[in-house]
Structure formats: structure tokens, C-alpha cells
Image (tube, rainbow over all chains, first blue to last red; front, side, top):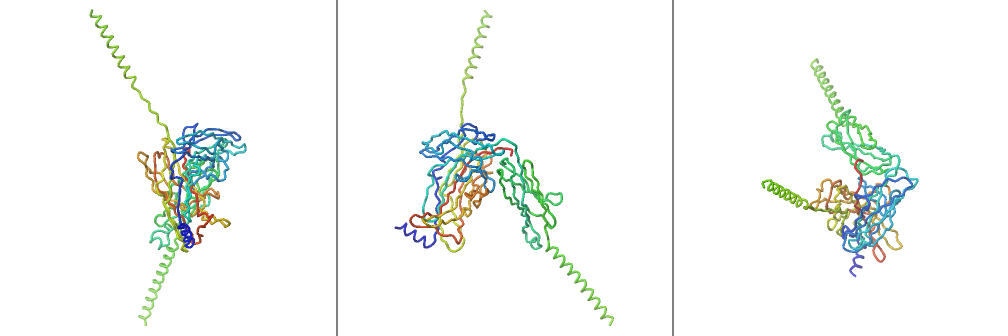
Length: 318
Length: 199
């Protein structure tokens, strides 16, 4: 009765109750690791049209029986360049699509580990380059729903085993820097009063047009005046997969009297390295306007003084 | 006579020396250390509620207990934890779904504490009020960085994440009643490791 009454009240008030429940309260339930290779991930170089097979181990880390579900997925990244494995139901186009396992669901006794076989079949028409994907394991039915008549966020834990597939052929690390834009930003009171910006906000997009994977792409953004470097910002772009693009935003402080022409130089430690320059003009209309007004004032004052002296001279002559 | 004593003493010395050597050679031991695995343990978020009032609002909630990422491999190579999120969807029979996009969910990792004996947490980065985004262009789900641990971070690391869910003034309340489902989203938290140096 109370639950029904609560639901009616919630409906009347438009209440969004929130509760998040998680499988994770079970805690660190599965492990997934290679059986045939040292390390914690799988790497292979494969010719187009070939198939590579291997073994992995699924381990139940708990003291209770549970069902493990395995899925092959593609790799992806977050907005800030963290490598991760895509969702179980996301479309697969590369390594995730080529990878299959002999058992995608298995019952595991407490503490049991089981060897599974995987196979990576690279299509004959596959383009050369680095492809990344992986196997992910989760516990079936671990999501618990807590219906409180509002908002529920369920948490699912997965452990991933990365699979790096290098399709033999010509390797290309071409990067481009595109859509470079720069805005000025205010800052100190004095500079604001003079209409002078305190910083430059640079924005651009790094686009990967090649076929190799960058695991830890780095670079710099320099603010230059003439040949001298005034400010430098390090770029840490993380993982950049072939075909991906990464928007970048950097704030560079402008020193002293900042009006004039500046150069932004973006350098990426790619293969080959990339350098792009863009010019930024910083106006100082208030400074010039103030100077103009001051100049006009001086001219006016001088003119007025001359007029007064002339009038005084004429009066004395009368 | 003297020669016999000298030979006997020499034999005794040689036997003692040989015996000493034999005793030292038997003092050996072997220890085998086997690498463990990478794992993640999460927990529930604390329940919270909100009443629509005609303005944009947000729901804040934190994990009820710390999440734990454990690197027991012993290799020290880098590892990452990321989360994907689906849209929040409320359903009812014969009615259109009500949706709050996952981009309205912002994730904060919280400060990371290294467990006893673990490498210092310095260098591990996470997210602060980072909205779930869609950098690859796939429709769903969106994702966000939970932890990014460059090498080496071996051991156990705890952190208490929190969520902020933006509720627009125009948001419809959850369906209630028989056969309905509240706004529901799924956060999938994945831990993995790998990569090659030099690129």
C-alpha cells in the first residue's frame, strides 16, 4: 500500500528519485588473460586472408559459482585519449569483427579457471595497418535493478583482454592538424581596461589519416613572436587510433603589452612529425583610441592655449 | 715415521676441506612468484531524489563505498579504466519512451589512494565532472575516463566516484504504475591493459 501511495505522490509531484545499483558490490569477479603469451594482452602480425588462433584463460575470482559471458569488441578511446574497449552491442568493424571465441558463455565453479580458444580471421581485403580490439568478460545477470519509481543507474563490471592485430603491409603515420582557431581572452583589470587580452585560446583538431596506432601521442603548442618562443604548452593526446580525430583546446597566456602579431605553432611527435603554424593578430583598439583621444586632447589644449594667448594679446593691444 | 705423519695429516686436511665444501653446497632454496591479474570492484551509488520545479537541476550522488582497481600482475605496464553509459530511458506499455541523454551524466573519479605496498598514486589521472561523450561517432554508448594509470602502478588503488545527472526543466517524470520502468541507464566499467612503448 505504502509503495502504491509513494508512486502516486511521486507522479503528482513529478519526482525523479535516483538510485544506482551495481553488480560491482560483488567485487572484482572475473579475470581474463592470455594463455599462450607472456604479458597481459595479445599481439599478432597477420597477412590479409590469414587466420591466427590462440588461447585465453577466464578465471572466477570469487568463492561462488557464476556464469561468464565473453564478447569480442573493437577498441575505442575516450574524449581525452584513454584506450578502452567498446560496448558489447556496439557495431564492430575491425579486430572485434574478426575475432571469435569457441565459448561465449560458461559456468565457472568457485575459483575455477578455464581455457578458451579464440581465432582472429583477417579478411583478404583488409587494408594494412594496426587494428585494435579485444575480448571482454562480464558476469551474466550481475545487473541488479532497484525500482524506486525514478532514475536508476546500473553498473556492470567488465575485464578486457586487448587484442592488437597488425595487418602486414605499408605503414603510414600521417597526422594532420586542422580547423586551427584562436580567440583572445581577458584577464587582468589593467589589460581589460586597455582592451588588451591576457591569453590566447587556441583550438584545433588532430586527425589521424594513417594506419598505425599511436599509444601515447605527444606534442607541443608554442606561442611565438618573431623567432622567439614566448610560451609553450605540452600536449598529451593519449591513444589515437587510425581514422580517429581529437579536438584540442589550449590556453596560452600573453605577456606584457600583447598587441601585435603572434604565431601559434603546433608540433606533433608523429611518424613523420607534423608542424603547423597560424598567425594571430591581437588588436588594442582601446589603447589606440585612448592614444587618439589623448592626442586630440593635447591638440585641443594646445589650440585653446594659443587662442587664449592670442585673445590676451589682442585685448592688450586694444 | 715423520713422513708417515705428514701424509696422514695431509689426508685429514683434505677430507675436512672436502666435507666443508659438501655441507655448503646443499644449502639451496627456490621461491616461485606467479603473477596475478587486473581486476575492478565497484559498488552501489547512494540513492538520491529530485522534484521537478520548473528549472534546470541536477542530481548528485556518490558511490556508497570506494571502488577498487587492482593490478596484481607484477609487470607494471600501464592500465586504464573507462566507463560507457547508455541513455536513461523510462518505458511504459503503449507509450513512447522518455529519454534523458547520457550526455547529461557527468562523471567524477575522485581522489585515488594507493593501498599498502602499492606504487604511489601519483600520475594516475581521472575525470572531473566530465560528461559522457561520443568521440568515435557511434550512436551509443558514450564513454568517459575513469582512471588512466601509466606504468608502473602496481597494487591496489581505491577511489570514490560520483555522478551528476543534469535534469532539464522540460524533463518528463518517470513513468509509474504497472508495467512501467523508471529512467534506467547502464554504466559499464571496463579495466584493461596493454600498449607498446615507442609510439
